[in-house]
Length: 294
Ligand code: HMG
Ligand code: MG
Image (tube, rainbow, N blue to C red; front, side):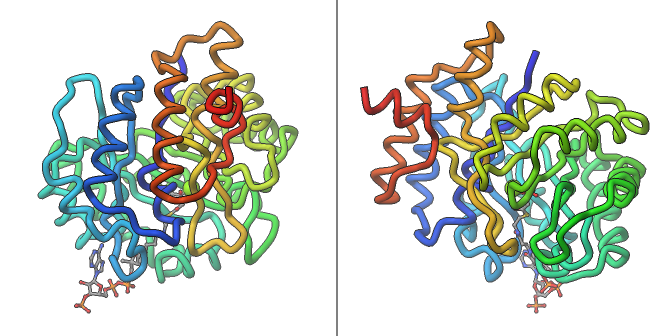
């Protein structure tokens, strides 16, 4: 069983110049659910000045439609974000930090060492309130500011997040620089410390290697992958970061390999095509182009 975490409403929209209305985001959310998406990051409770695209987090996540099979998630960077998130109907929270010092600072305005107690408090409080928390580690396969990142440093940050109480760590290829051999090596090393089921893959597709990396990750034993409808995505504080691996492209690959996802590819593509109209631009997913162009 492969779990697909759809991050388009968060990772996707945070990187768009155009800010979509809350009503449009809500329509995307409804359409994604109709197409079979069951795990979905809907927004971030970050500072609206840092990510104005998601400044409507309260409005969007305040009253999410109930579906017993759907898990709604949101990013939470600190106590203030937690207070906001706890007022919403989001089911699970995600904390995030980077394996590299410079990206961590550019993205959340703190050194790695200063970040740990902030996130520790978020996880402890969230768990007290009955919320599960996921962790993200960014720049696992390379940093836009520092270049190579040591696997030992990635492992150290993962370990700290698990000690805090996160149930899973998603490994971010923030700027999409990874290649399959590197993915295999990093996972092999991390699996000596952490069970495969406790890690997820988050591959941006900047250099067109997202699908190859995802396939390699699955072959290596990962069972959870983050993707974004249409291939939207990127981190505004990581120069050069492009879209996430497109959900359509991964779903096509999985269905072709006989792995069911419960996702209706045609419906998903219709949603992405609808968003293309709202954003006034083409989205990068190859499968989207092929299916909608038919
Ligand atoms: P800061 O300025 O250092 O915050 O920002 P601060 O704690 O010094 O507080 C300053 C003011 O901000 C205070 O207000 C706080 O209340 C307020 P004042 O007293 O001056 O009136 N404040 C907040 N307001 C609303 N919500 C909050 C919040 N926190 C403080 N949560 C902060 C620190 C972390 C908030 C900021 O740097 C930030 O929002 N960063 C987020 C950047 C971001 O969202 N990046 C993209 C997501 S990560 C990503 O995309 C990577 C990922 O996809 C994986 C991958 O691809 O690798 C996950
Ligand atoms: Mg990302």
